[in-house]
Image (cartoon, rainbow, N blue to C red; front, side):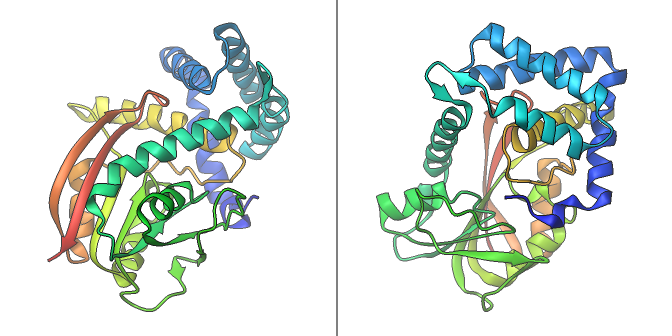
Amino acid sequence: MRDARYRSSKLVILMFEKLQLLNSDKNLRQTISRDFSTTLLSIGFAKDKAVIIVEKFFDLLSQSDSTNVLEKTFHEFIFNQKIEASSFKDAFGKLEISRAERIYSEIVEFISFDEKVLDYGCGNALVAQLLTDKNKLNVTGCDVVVYNKKETLIPIIKIDNYHVDTPDDSFTIGYANSVIHHDLNPEKVIAEISRIVSNKFILIEDTLQGNDATEIKSHSCRLFINDYFYNRLLNDSDIPVPGEYMKSLEWINLFSIYGWKLIKQDQLGWSKILPAVFRERFIFERK
């Protein structure tokens, strides 16, 4: 289900302008081709089929005059693909389950059984369901779109213009996995998280890497295109991809503004599915 909030002309134009770099930068195009192939191989496509799909993307990009046209046409193509005896959506669903299990393993040790837990930007709520099933935790999700996945029974609150309809300090702990960079105004997101989460927050984010401004800019561009491919072309959930990424210190400073103290930071490393994604984990507590 696509949410009209993210069909705003500002975001659509922003995403399309960033994608146009692929038509003007030969080296970037080659790098992105390799990245996309890695992602498609992770889903289960054979190498020759992955090459065909990547070529189809570039053909459609050159022919499209907006992200809406590009996404609609690519979805019609990719959702009809088969991977052995499975449909694309079934194969992608298995990848999403594997991803949820990995995220679960990255956060569960920091959550006590008696916590009231918020999954901010829960999406399909598979992580929240794992925490509930395996650890009997009390988890509530929130997101801008309420996904009605048959695999999950988690209560989900719809986020309305940054507001989560729940009282102050409703949750003792919260977590967000690669979510906040999807918003054009991450500070508003953090402000609302700080209102409703009282004690601890686990942030896992895709952070910018590079030794100088040129390397950081290059990584930001590649990260955006990886992000866009996974969340808007392989997925039909209308996740916004503004491409506004930050370095780890910027995340720490932004949370600090709202009274959070960093108590632990880990580098989780480069993603095996999205080669441009470098993930870090931050554990914050109230000052």
